[in-house]
Length: 96
Image 1: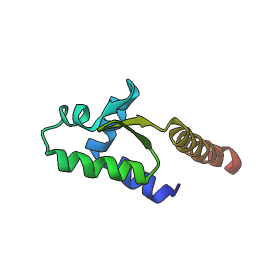
Image 2: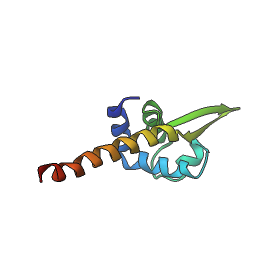
Image 3: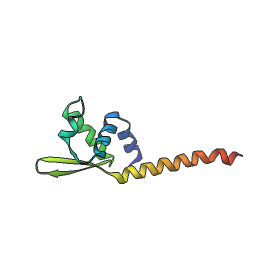
Image 4: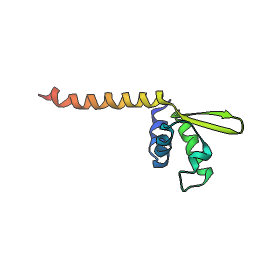
């Protein structure tokens, strides 16, 4: 996983909303597309970016592709941000 790819993926509001949708469970691309006023091709591209960032996983089920969150990557990001925040909070104490 590249942090740069992850941050790029999270920068787009549609991709963040896709992640929110997948919090509720697995969905097909068609089910995801129903939630957005964009083309299926556009949603497909967003799904590709999320997959490249390892934020989602996909699995073929017959003629459908089922998408789900990859929670382990999200946990790594949260730990990194928490650690970063913790170091920032420690700086004022060190100056005293």
